[in-house]
Length: 117
Image (cartoon, rainbow, N blue to C red):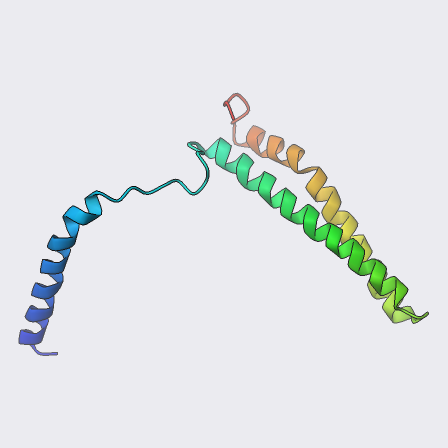
């Protein structure tokens, strides 16, 4: 690119930036995290939502493993697959149930135990 095109592009970009500045000053950005102002509240919010997601997926996996058991027709390989699926679903539910303890442990490790959450 020669120098004339470079200068014209720089001039156009600069003028557009100067025109857009007053309009950008009026934009209000809403907090997408729902009012969490500190790290402690953010951590609690994220982990509780992840626990809900894990619990939901684990419930779906229990239903899926039941379907696999019913449709296995005595095949040892399919029964093994269904057992693995059920085992992982139970582990997922255990993680989802213990999410409160996980949050408390992380808060204690990060010294947020005294913080108001």
